Image (tube, rainbow, N blue to C red):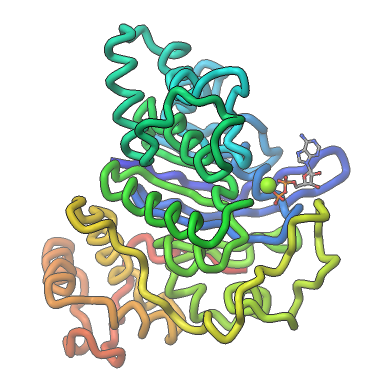
Amino acid sequence: MGVEVVVEGLGKSFGTQAIWRDVTLTLPAGEVSVLLGPSGTGKSVFLKCLIGLLRPERGRVLINGVDLCTCAERDTYEIRKLFGVLFQDGALFGSMSVYDNIAFPLREHTRKSEKEVNRIVMSKVDMVGMLGAERKLPGEISGGMRKRAGLARALVLDPSIILCDEPDSGLDPVRTALLSQLLIDLNAQLDATILIVTHNITVARTVPDNLGMLFRRELVLFGPRELLLTSDVPVVAQLLNGRKNGPIGMSEERDTAEDPALPPEDPDNVRGIVPQLEPTPGLPRRDAVRRRKLRLMQSLHTLPTPARQAVLTTMTPTDLDDYDTWRRRTSAIPIATRKTTTPTTRVEEPAPRSRWWSKR
Ligand SMILES: Nc1ncnc2c1ncn2[C@@H]1O[C@H](COP(=O)(O)OP(=O)(O)O)[C@@H](O)[C@H]1O
Ligand SMILES: [Mg+2]
C-alpha cells in the first residue's frame, strides 16, 4: 500500500525570493491527489522538496515518521527509494533505447540479474501500453509515448509514492484522456500514493481523490475533490471552472511564454462535480476509495455544506455500514439522523484527523 506524506508549515525561498510559505497538507496513503497553480507558483519546487532534492527553510515533510527536511543524508537516500518520479519532459536519456531507459534504475540501484531486469521492464512496458516500442530511441517515438516511457521508468522500483510533474503538458486531449485513465488504472493495480501537478482542468476534475491549489505564495486550499469542486474561493472557482474573470490574469505569475495560466476548456462544459474516473473494467477496484469514504465520513462535519452534500451523495449503504462499524469500535457519537445518502444527513461528532485538509 502507498505511504502517507504529511507536510507541515513548509516554507521555501531562494535568496530573497519567497516561493511559498506555510504549506500544510496530507497526501493520504494510496490516494490520488492533484496540485494546481499558475506557472511559476513553485509546484515543481514543491515536488522537489517532497523527495528531498531541495531543502525547505521551514516546516516538515514526514514520511514513515522521518522528517525529510532535517534527516541525515543516508535517511534521505532510503526514503527517496519509496518514490517514483515522472519529470515534466519524461527526462529520458536520448541515446538509450526505451528499454534501457526503463531498466536504468534497476541496474543502478539493485543487483538484479538481467533476466529479472527483463521481466520487470517488460511488465512495466506492458502496464503503460508500450509493448513493441521498447527497442526504439526516445527521438523515434511520440511525446505521449515518451511520457508513458517516463512513467514506466518511474514504476520499476515499485514505488509507494508516485509524483508526476505535468504529465499532460504537450499532449492532445485524446492522449491526455488516455494518460488520465492510465494513472487511475495504475492506482488500482499498485495502491500507491500519487501526486500529479497539472494545469489541465479536465484532469483535475476527473482523476484525483484530493485537490489542492497554490497561488500567490500560499496553498489556498487542499482537500477532497468535493471541497474544491464546490468551492466559492474566487481563485479556485475561477481555475476549476475555466473562467476568464477572477484573480488569475494573463500576466499573473507566469514564467514561460507557452504555458497559459488559464486552461483552454469551454467554461460552459465544466461546472459542478463530474464523476471521477473508474479503473478500466477487469482491473481490481481501487482500495483507496473505501478508505477515503470512511475518512470523509469521520471529518464530514468540518466540511462546508456544499462539499458535505456532495460527499453524502457518493455514499452507498455499505459505506455507511463501514462508518457505523468504525463508530461502534471507537465509541463515537452516532450520526444525528441516519437517512443514509440524502444530503440532509447531519453528522455532528468530533472526529480524529478532522483537519487533514487545509484552508487559508
Ligand atoms: N534551483 C532554483 N534556484 C533558484 N530559483 C529557482 C530554482 N528552482 C526554481 N526556482 C524559481 O522558483 C519559482 C517557482 O518555480 P517552479 O517550481 O518551477 O514553478 P512551477 O512549477 O509552478 O511553474 C520560479 O520563479 C523559479 O524561477
Ligand atoms: Mg513546473
